[in-house]
Amino acid sequence: MATDNLETEKRFTNLEGILSASSFMQQGKEGEPLAREALEGVYKKLSLDNYSSGLAKTLRDPKIVGLAIKNVSEEYQEIKEGLKIQEFSNIYSSDLKKYLGDYSEEATKEFAQQGNITYGEIMKKLAIAEHTIKGEKLGVSSKEKVEEAKKVLEKLNPVIFMINSIEHIRTRNYSAKVEDTYLSNAMQGIYQKEEQSA
Image (cartoon, rainbow, N blue to C red; front, top):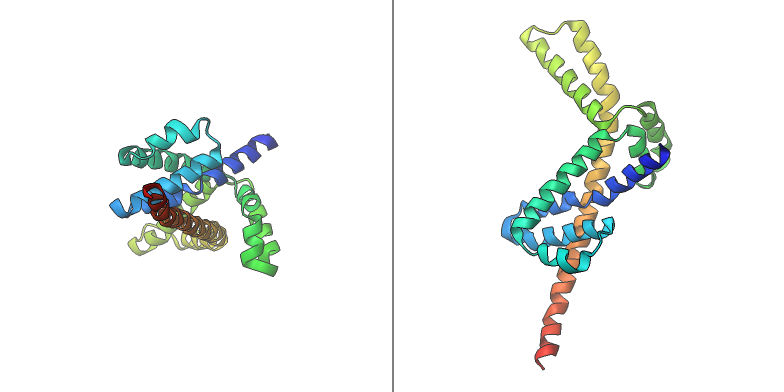
């Protein structure tokens, strides 16, 4: 069972770059080359067989890139929603230490308290709590239910904020690496063409 969890955590981490690919793809034509580069990075992390030959050619088709990004994004989201909060603590342990410093142990304990609940379950609880609070204005939620809902938000929002913030930082960092690689290759390509024509 522990091996399955480690495999799921590893797959989740390997798929993270899809968030960058999706973001680049939303930029339209200008973002397509970067989306391809980000998607290629995801595929390389997954160590797909025969990556460098047929798959690389396929990735040059914008229609395929969009579909691949959509499919991998769905898989990423599905894995994310099924991960237990404790698993995020494992995945993001170095990030928690880096960004929280002395508070990382406190955050790890908070994650452990929510250990067996999944990200998706927490998101549902938060949605129900927010709905209950809105219901007070309409007169359909009792004060007791609203107070319970506020406690749920107070308890769960920090953990979700932490997960989403680290995911955002990691996506931003991956996007920067993709841009650096793409632009470096493009600049080198100018001189490679000159060498070939000489």
